[in-house]
Image 1 (cartoon, rainbow, N blue to C red):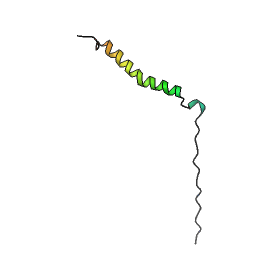
Image 2: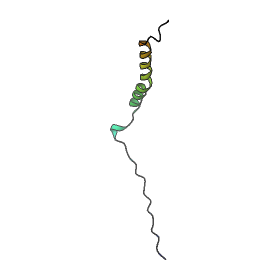
Image 3: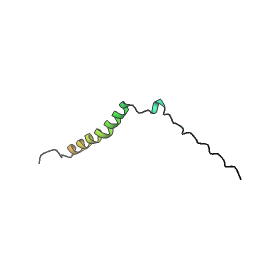
Image 4: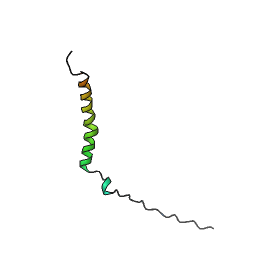
Length: 56
């Protein structure tokens, strides 16, 4: 009878992020502000420049 080869279990490697790429609460707030409030401000400026808020 041939011997069965034992399978070694590979431990999962933990990838550690560098200090430069860590997400801090400050950068998260900046990103949310830019992509959340920024488009709203741009839409208001665009609509006001086209006379959307002026009464007829």
